[in-house]
Amino acid sequence: MSLTRRGLIGSAAALPFMARPASAARNVLRLGVGNSPTHLDPMFTTIGDEYIYDNLVFNGLTRMRADLGIVPDLAEKWTYSQDLKQWTFHLRRGVKFHNGRELVADDVTAMFKRLLDPATAAPSRSNYTMIEHMSSPDAYTVIFNLSFAYGGFADIMSDRQVKITPRDLVAQLATKPIGTGPFMFQSYTPGDRMVLAKNPNYFEAGLPLLEGVELRIIPEMSVKIAALRAGDIDIVWQIPLDQVKPLSADPKLRVDSVATGSWDAAIMNNINPPFNDVRVRRAFNIAVDKRDVVELTLFGEGVPTISPIPPTSPFYAKDIVIPKADPAASRKLLAEAGHPDGLKIQLIVPVGRPVRERLGVTLQQLAGPGGFDISVQRVPFSSYDAEVSGKAPFYIDGYFARPTVDTSTYEFLHSNGSWNERLWHYSNAAVDKALDAARETGDAEKEKADYIAMQQALNADPCGFFAYSVNYACAYRQWVENVRTHPMQWFDLRHATIG
Figure 1 (cartoon, one colour):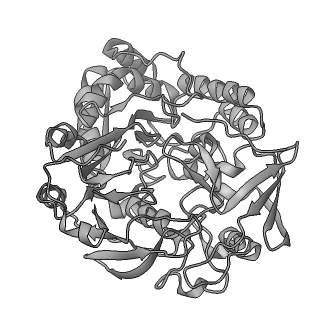
Figure 2 (cartoon, rainbow, N blue to C red):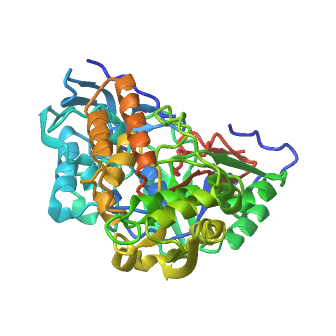
């Protein structure tokens, strides 16, 4: 049976009066990012700046387009069994790693064996534990046998950390990475830049059009924006949302702000007081109007949501009404939960994450009339794993969009989910049942009904406070053409040009 994609949810021309950038002479695009990549082995990348690199230097079996459609990448086609438990991927022939060796099926199976080995401690391992067995009957065919039916298996092959790397060069990936992507790693100086060169043997004939890409590491956003305005860099990744309107007014620039499935939330620990009482969680959800949160925190660049499923997705439960703030009803629920005089609570926010810091302050202000007396404590984001995640009663956190609804929800909301254990310790039998059913069907309509049922159960018994699905915005010089802002926060620069 052939795979059909179940859907989840331009570039301006260069202005004629503009001088060509100096970089155009050598056709190298300069992209401003904020952080030095920590990992060069794609299996261990965890931050947005690293994901950009992943998608320029490496390929997966499938690729996710900017419209979130799944298309072939290293696999030219794939099929699946009627029960959705066996998936067969047919590799392109003649694809070369950057060192000239041909990619074959053994490279694919070796990469997934390494990913699934608990000793590897790969961050994304939990998304692929349904893989029970792999085989390669020939050099260009890989068969995955799954422990349970999984309709989105080809979709998750497009994700960031499952790029195919050479099986015989694993030891050097952390320092001298080799992939099959349109650009080849040349050098990396932490705190300064990463230099990538065009792959002259890329498997898509004639691509890429650029001669190279430089990831310029500039921590201060104001410095990045000044460099963009001056023409010293060509793109700024993930501009602050309060800069969308000002930068859009600059005729030398182009700004794309796109809806995403990335979200921020007020995380509530469901196993410890006071949030072990669903009435307290419900009270907070009606104490605050999420529309006000979007305006005050995101400057309008986002939309309220009720779960990790964004309102742009066809799986979003559109019939669930996001309530307006009702302080009286909130105080009534708090009183029923044993807090007749309201509730004093500390909210932890991550230092260095300005949007999430702003969200915490916004909630502090908006929740007061509903009976929540919130004090804000700032903790370095680097300390979250050790001191905050899964431990603190109440804190702000958020997550990048995942490639499927299942990977966006199951690990975060199922009682056995790995992220649930690190967040709210939430348990709801109806939510579990719906999530289990959704991942095991290949019927899009049945899947949609399951996810709507999940959201209805979650709305009645909230795990925390999902504030919004946040927009993702990038700013470009007008001379950068044929690049579209990708809602997964990476770049496809195969067709990019500098006009």
